[in-house]
Length: 449
Image (tube, rainbow, N blue to C red; front, top):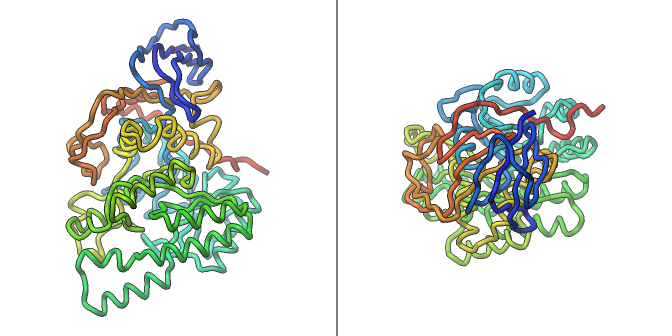
């Protein structure tokens, strides 16, 4: 039986911060208190914060398949180095659509992950009959697109209704990417007919109206079916408001936040082009826009943060024009630092970080109480953070295969000192140990008869 004691640190939870020690026994948290005794392995956390490991529930690592953009070893190294200990991953290039796909992927990932991981399935309009067996097979959630994107077909209203009914029957979770297919397709035809291929086409093509219309339609169907749904990467207060209003009427629906919508501006695409091509695009235009978004984080309109980590290398981002180049940004290297900095800057409380990036996503997707908190019986997944340190972000520091970040050049206050997965140190001072001890975490439907 192995023991470890984290001594002298300040525990951070959604309820606040307090000085306590942590006793770890065989990879689980056995006790949290002012004096839990000693162990053969003592970790000095004096002057450090002890936060639950990040739980990032929206990650794309392209593995298996074409891994030139990212793979599990590199992507999960980036996660571990910055304090993320659990991810939920789904790749568009090699989607899970039936149980055999899930089994194949699980076998492929043996020994390839530095952190624990769940797997999400894609919802294909002509394969809805596989929803029950996938949920019982252990997927964490089902990804739904309302528009064809990344080669994944969008679901029209009838298929979306059928999918949500099936998921509601099973008690399954889903994550919905909301952009209206008809609106984006009409905009694309008009822009191409006018001969435009400038960077400004992105926000006209993947426009605000498309996201708002699709969110309203999806929210109404979530409400009538009783499904458990999260709206992915909600880009603006208007869309977040639709989700919040639907939740107030009793629907089980939540809004997912991503850092890019709080820190990048709509007009940056004009200068940066493909390096700001993600969808929905950034919407913020002013400081006031960002302030309104942060207020929605503080008042609970946004349920949790994720990265939507969807990297491409700089070379890949330079291949083709703004129409054809890959969508997406890297984010696993920077999201936990971004949130820690937001807390030190006063945008949110440090306790909010533990809620938004650990406990809330773990609860939302049924991974709690094993993951997402520092309570007794939970996996001993935690990160030690020095709140006085700073990290000036450079591309050379990044572990993602993308090897660049839209946050390069910024300085984040607070820095991860060490990350622990089930009681084992997996990263220190921004370097992952490449131990690849990550295990598959079944979703809450696994094994249900």
